[in-house]
Length: 235
Image (cartoon, rainbow, N blue to C red):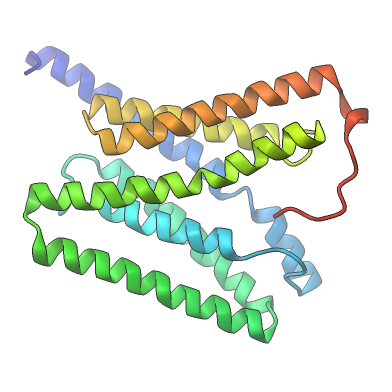
């Protein structure tokens, strides 16, 4: 048990870290805007995939539920950042579906229904069959599993940078935002004594640091002229 003075300082620091994490996360949420401007301009989804936004929406919804007071008291900043994230993903998916071909449109609508069903089932099961402590544990494990699956994207980008010796598909600002957001929520989780927050964000911090190190290395060692042309678009 911390003394009251240290407890208040810890509370202020955790709130500051959580607010910072929310702000840095906005940088990630707005990063796909140029892609969707292109989709709207060309009135076509071209070769872009909508699956990353489906995965991101499901991740945001599960983590949003974990941050709600009914599941985890006193971590409302987890709920706020994921509610903002879910809002952005819904907008992106709406645009994607509006300009997709008929077959892809039906597929994406089916996946949206699946996401809603999974989220609804998670809420129902956690409220119906678990008490408050067990509910937090149950949803916490689901949120960690969901976050870990999202690490496939930075791992893919890291592999791509090493193979091509190019940072073209790893923008510095995006990598920096990823690192700062993960670091902020890692600190928030530590100060809140919540392993379901600090473990996945600790992993995210390490991956973000690796991305920044690779960006620094390949930018300085090879420069712009070392980029190898890529035929296939990555999105």
